[in-house]
Length: 142
Image (cartoon, rainbow, N blue to C red; front, side, top):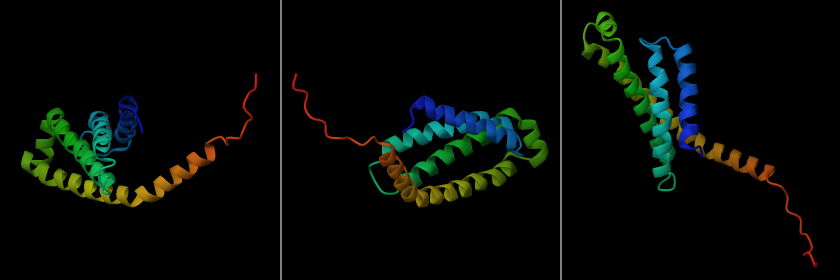
């Protein structure tokens, strides 16, 4: 389980990658939205992890909402003239972007839930292989 700082670091790296590869209206927004999503993911998972079987899906759904909607808000605030020039109205921008976030969140949640069991098994197997074998040692009789 990552710490807060590690989750934030993962989000920063994801933000840099997304900002470099994105063709969105304002790629630098990823530098803020991805760390938000990563921290929300950690917090949500810490709350839900042992409570019910769909925790991975719900965690991913909430984290994707946090990342996606913060991206939309940052884009609106940072480049409002560009948004209005390209889409005409704020509502038109939202009609295009909100469904992208909703669909992406749904797909991400389904994929996360589907991968949870095989990923858990692989991690458990890897942890068992790395654990040093304990050999019985005679008690020290000094």
